Amino acid sequence: MLIYFGTGERHYGDIPLAFQRRRAWEFQAVLKGKIGLSLPDGVEPVQAHRLWISPPGHTHGWVGEKGRGSEVAVFHFPSAPELLTRLLNPKGFLEIALNRRGIHQVRELARKVERYWNRPAPGMMICYEHALMSLSLIACEVSQPAETGQSYQQSRVNAAILWYAKRMEENPAFPEMARAAGVSTAHLRRLFHQVLHASPNQIKDQMRFQRAIQLMSDPAMKLERVSDRCGFGSASAFSRAFKSQFGSSPQSWRRAESR
Image (cartoon, rainbow, N blue to C red):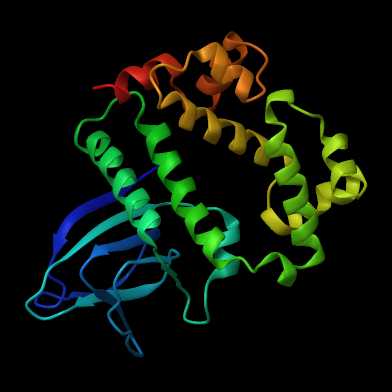
């Protein structure tokens, strides 16, 4: 669920945003211009092309360059993937440098979210969930250590997830994932909970729905093909699972997206 959204030009340099204790997870991206965090113990340098993530309870404000505006996109969610908590720095927030692709991705997310924010429709919850997962993925991809520096636990989980992603159409069983990762099913299940704070089935479902949403953004992609590509077995099984997860059918989501 999304509880606040804002996008467009801000003038934090001339009208700083005062300290405030955040009630939710805040994702704030600067896509053009420069802004920076204002913290109780000092002001961070203003930066360009950044995504800042802070958890509920974090106190901060925002500053910018005098006389210059900046383009931002701000999302507040009541919850976020547990892994983000482990990536926070000692000051309690996460700062991510955005490359050109990242800037474009955040802009597109903001564009889609803005449409539902202004005109609620059946697909809005799916859109908001997609935005949360995409922003979290940007943070994790940039912040996670390289393969050579990964822990044993992280490397086994990553091996299982990568193996599954390549074979999603086949919907392989969890024991096959464990064998591919070189560990027992019980051990890999423990590693999923330890590293991702989620069960293997929860992660598999997130991956399948994420891919399904990406595929359905192509209006020419039939639901039967989406179902096959994501390992659901049939279009009817996919529709039931999708509606159970998001409260909206794939067809309703597509109609809302096409408006």
